[in-house]
Length: 354
Image (cartoon, rainbow, N blue to C red; front, side, top):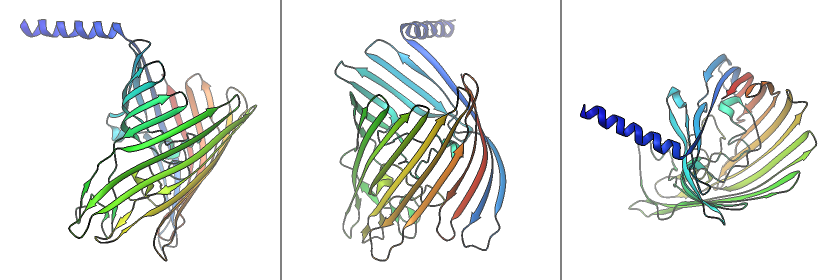
């Protein structure tokens, strides 16, 4: 009886707190159905042709919560690996002149131009679009200005081992400041201008001499509408940008955009990327979109070679009913280097928002 009374009291408290806030739940079910053909560049291996169908890891359920005009919040769970994972979880306080966000949210370093759906709504992520993260952060919003203090990333390449987290060799690191990101958006009637910057720093500790890994990224972007036609573009560049986001210049995200360390010498990694996206709305049911992205990185040492990737796609989003969308798409990821892959794909994403 005592346990029952405690459960009833707990439910009553939960109900009272729920009634005190306005909870607006939402969800998005997303299934990918694609054929792909993978060719390994300049390698004596056969092409691999395959069909895949899966629940996308960014299928989600969440809620926007309003406690008062000053206090709001949001949570969102995804389906990574078939298991629930926290995508977003934050509270936001509007103090009049701006707002303060505390929790896990997208960093301010993304331009959000492309709607490419292959690769779990890749959006030219890391192949032209700078691949920002969802990170634990404290973010100040003042009108069109954003300033975020973010959880730092202390990864780097250990020569011969891949990332520092590899079992073979691992070095201790020391962090003294959070990662920092800035963004400004100027909005007009039919166009937007965007600028962003990020910086982080940490030390690799070694008896032979500590090394400082400094990372930065700078980017600008713009989009403009001409009636039914929309055009968006951006360009970014920086050094050791993997510590602030992603540059997907080889077959895997692992190790791309990071500095390299051989136990004595630290070699910085320079990067540049850009994208162009065009979209045309035919009617309420049918639209068209095409996009192209390019990214390359190069270690800052004599005789180093560039690591490059291109991606391009064409899609025809079809809205069958409010919240019901099918997006056929055809495209290519071309990693260009020997023994890396060129992947050609076609298929569709199926999505119902609820």
